[in-house]
Image 1 (cartoon, each protein chain N blue to C red):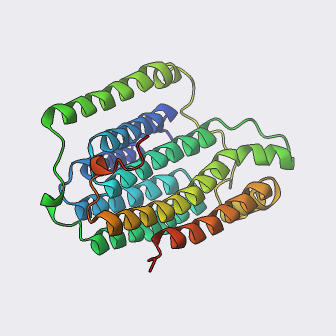
Image 2 (tube, rainbow over the protein chains, first blue to last red; image 1 turned 90 degrees about the vertical axis):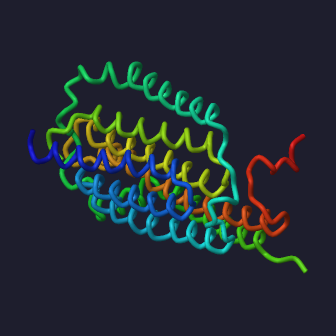
Length: 169
Length: 115
């Protein structure tokens, strides 16, 4: 086992365990902190795949912005007490985990299984494809319409969330 | 990371997506359901980036269109991040409004808009 494989395995195990922690944690704050670990390790997986800019964006957008909103909302609504919401029954939970297992098995056997025989262990992406310069260049040339539409979407999101959350007197 | 096969990334992505699905199914707190949706979006992002790294078309010399074909996966991830940010802002605003109206956020009790 090489060092890279070992690093990938450690990150994969931490990712799966922290995602599992989001689902099974009793208190919402623990779920949120577990999700922070998940997003952070995922960013390092992106760094390992040479996606420099997207790894930094992952840390800034997800662990910075989105998790801050989640924690703010949890603390503001005082949902920290574990007895405010009751869990579904054991049968329902086991059924849901069974559905999840079936999903993984179906995807692995039908999609990932045939791919294991391809010669896909060597990356074919060109040099420097994950750096800020190349991402910015294609964002502002080939995808400039999508970029503008995304900015309009964010503006609508800002105005809409203010309108929805505003106190009406 | 050299030497990691593509299907390892895809298997990891499938596992994360399935855990997110289970969370959406069994949780009653809408905020945790939102977190699980973010988990599923991130799993899809991981698939996009793995495919972009391992299945790029061969590069013709110096052509700008060819270069943009390589960047498609990353562009999809950039837009997913933008949409996720907008979605979280609006969704948490809706949860705050519901909490102000009803003073509890059990998702099974939110049946006011059922037809």
